[in-house]
Image 1 (cartoon, rainbow, N blue to C red):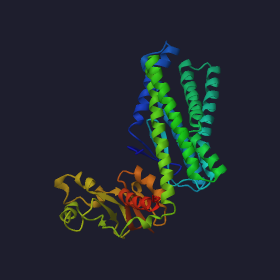
Image 2 (tube, one colour):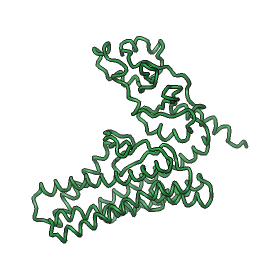
Image 3 (cartoon, rainbow, N blue to C red):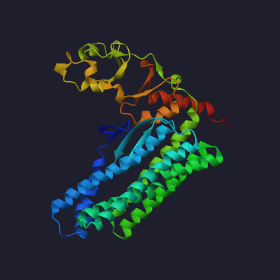
Length: 379
């Protein structure tokens, strides 16, 4: 899930929002302001309901962020790098640089998320009881109690043994430990995820058709997401099996054409597409020859025509911190999910800060086709 609005870094982890997060904020705010709050405490003004509902929705997002940050922190402590966290309509996603290397690490990384939500729910529940004992406004107590309940529900739901939920990863860790086969364990967790997804879709539509309850659309939507994500997770595991132990250096395009950050756009455009610059994306180099970022034809075309003689590549490029990068010895299987989630669908291959290659999805797909053909049994 790509981020739309970067929020910076928390505990060294890049955090961002996807535009779809506005859907959950609007849904929570509207549901509380027009439903739960006035039903439970009808003696307040409309602005009080809406203001507290919006604040509650923001705190709910913060609890989702805490859940994903817990995954990220424990992943780093277990030797798994974290590329970032993105909050979106159906929760949050912690993008791990690679997979856990042992069932124990998988267990710790997956289990800390539901545990964090459960602890947050328990703390908020105690806070709601304490505020009620102090005779605080019933509306405030209602908001805190809702946050406590939703965090407990989040913990329980995420603990269900079905991929891609945290419980699915716990199931995979258990099966992996029992069988020693990561691919087989992933298939089992993915099958459980698809079963749960279909159950939620069927029950959601049944509620809408037979009970006229439109809220059934929500579990149906989550069920559809579970099926798609579980299938993608199984496909990713199978790709790992085919691409196992293949380094990035074997699929990358070596010594790609580069462009200095000091080059003006006008000068760059005079040499393409029939001159030196024949591609659609180029590594941008700092004056000392190290990688500075990535520039694409699309980014260049955004610059006003009249300013291209004074605008440089460095002014329009995507800076290196926002570009997917890899080392020559990194595994293709670990790079692939990051590449699919990147904005440019390209990764710069760096060795000591210098560009030694570039990898696109097409490069990996081509290698995958060859490997699949080579390993396909003959009849």
